[in-house]
Image (cartoon, rainbow, N blue to C red; front, side):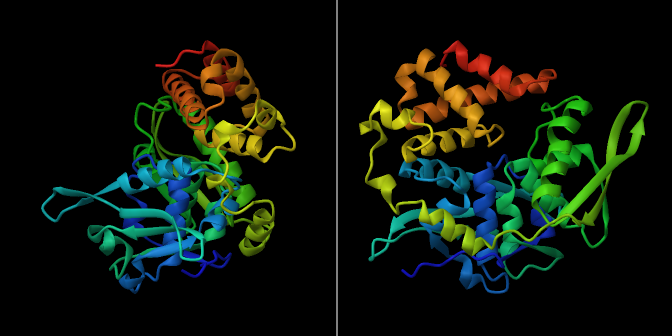
Length: 356
């Protein structure tokens, strides 16, 4: 199977109706995979539904370093479980999966690849559709570091030509995959979602936005008006192909299936500046926190784990699950009340050492 490189000029073409459906809590990596899939199909030809690309390219663009098959199983399993609900003509709805297969394997030449296929029922949303659609360069989606950021980019990019979009907070939550119970206070939603997205899009994509209340009753805000403009400060980034090549230079292909982290020494894992195994673990734990925290902050958490849960600290997947569990506890706390310093609160949760 020939290596199919990802390129900077790949365009994502997405049906408006599909873009406005609830994302069903897709993770950042699942959303990125979805964007890659859309960039590599021909929406006018359903025979292109089978998409494959080099695993090394995926590692490079995600800046993941060396990763193991269990990691890809988590991402692939999550992707094929994602569903959409489509309204029917008589007021009902139909729920079905977007994808039916995500395979990670090696070809006859030993080159590892990712292959994705859409579910038959989702083809009408991906190919030969009748309806409005929009496009964007794949690179924009891959530079964003959070799922809310990527979704906000798509939600606003769809209306770039119009120049503005008025949307209810309830609808925006649904399109972002945020439940009504999350960020119940507008000031928290504004701080942790809207402002984070605004800054990230201005720094990393070809559009910028401002927003203001559009409809309110008393102090309660029901709708927001987003003004969308081309990002004047946007600088065309290093081409995706060059970015991949540079990152791939630091990646030993297929090392994840040759090295068992559980056979590595503590010195291997605790060398914070030189060990690729250590850097792999830190990047992996950043993903468990939805890439919200810096490398240095994750290193602090990882060090605490060595003291409070040493039986988990040296196991890759158990470490991931532990940090992810604590991160979810942090999010649950944030839903109920304002957490001013999220990292400090997460640090306290990790220090408890309790595992349910």
